[in-house]
Amino acid sequence: MKQGIHPEYKETVIKCACGNEIHTRATVQDMRVEVCSNCHPFYTKKQKIMDTAGRVEKFKKKYNIK
Image (cartoon, rainbow, N blue to C red; front, side, top):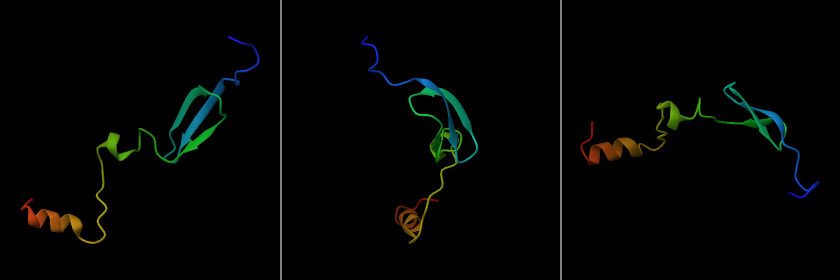
């Protein structure tokens, strides 16, 4: 590898809005994210269906889903 062309690879902390902290190494120091694997609905199996116009109920009624 050539010397002097690669960025510094340093220890960093990734902080989520839910309070989870992930310690890793990266070229960027201290990152903040909105969702992580501890709070993302796909991984927690607590997905919420956002229904503002009654579309979910209309679909369930149309296809007779309870």
